[in-house]
Image (cartoon, rainbow, N blue to C red; front, side, top):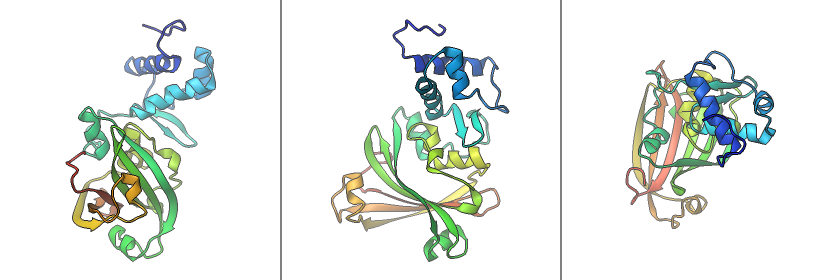
Length: 240
């Protein structure tokens, strides 16, 4: 169809479509960075905001990924070695529903005894702490707290994560940016009461029984790469 300024389709969506067509035709390759936002801006004679929105749409769809300080690259979503395919994000998308994320908190912490035990690191080892609400079709369903040793993902930031699409998956982020693949995992579920602080985030009554699911993901070397604790309402089925 081509880029058409007179079309009713927003310019950023047309640019995204043009870039996708270019990827399919081999105009862009996985081993080289994509054109910068400024280059896209000049090529299509649009604003920087429009160029940024075009790339963001492709990142949210999992077609592209942005590495801070390096540029934007093509994702190889069809590769057989993508071990995170059965994560929350991919399963929900494949069901035709819309997953999204709101990051409540992201910071570095020192591992306490529990976190150190789960991640098999020394107590007071620096770890990333990520607290997120996971949504399905805009309905909050999960409250997830994730812990990753800082030594595994140097310079990991909040900006690595998207609020929509495949790039909201922590497994995706670690694999694409740091080459860390989830090889296996184990989980434990137990009934608890949600705290007064966390209950409003999921629109759950205080002290109402919920499920707390602890999950440890292991890498290729058999060592833990992620420890997560997820809280969700007992009445929720698999995905809400």
